[in-house]
Length: 317
Image (tube, rainbow, N blue to C red; front, side):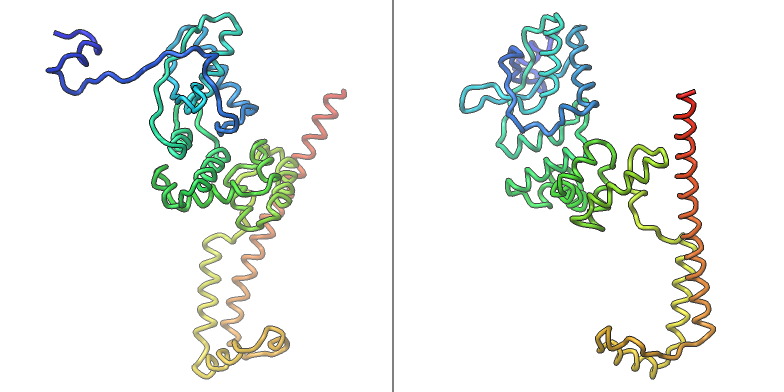
């Protein structure tokens, strides 16, 4: 009876166990293609991630194999496992004996190499901006949004959002990369403000910091909307106004639609007073809710500013 995986793989009568190609390569022989990895090596989370691998190598703990390929120059180049290599080299600098790293050969083309890197869930996941840049790379290689979505098991809407972020100006990328603005907040701002999104977000960062908040989120950049109850009331009131229009009034409105905005200026139509009053009251309720929200934000800003002043004065005492 076979008592090891190697023996089971060699046994012709055993089905379901096969030996794969696993190679051992010295860390210093492994190469990184500049710009290929989507990670930001200055990101504190990535630095900690590499440190964790270094500690694993120092302590002799198990580290999963890297995925590599041999390029046209004969170099063993990493496809997946860049942080593991860096962690191994760091461990060697600190005295660990890491003669070889386990490596699996990659089989696929240049597009599939990018896809493997984006999908990789080994350890630290890619941040949204890095994913966005990966999608853009695939897009430039000829992938459609639908194909990227299918291959990454995402929705087309998600891919479109990521590509919008990837194509944003550098000021937006800088705010997202620094952590001052959440990726999806940036996407929301890009949709609403386009080229001026960076300027808009910078203002939001200042507002957030004045209240002691470190990161601008999607909630901070979305335009204020009345509560659902008020919106429902406004719709019902508007519906009430429209229901007062008889066929003659509707024909008049149809004729007015043909005129340019400047021609309509100063013209009037008769509207049922009760219906119009109902609409006005709904608007007034929404306006009051908006003022209340603005006041709430102002109070928070003033409180945060006062706490900062007290903190400075306390430090000087």
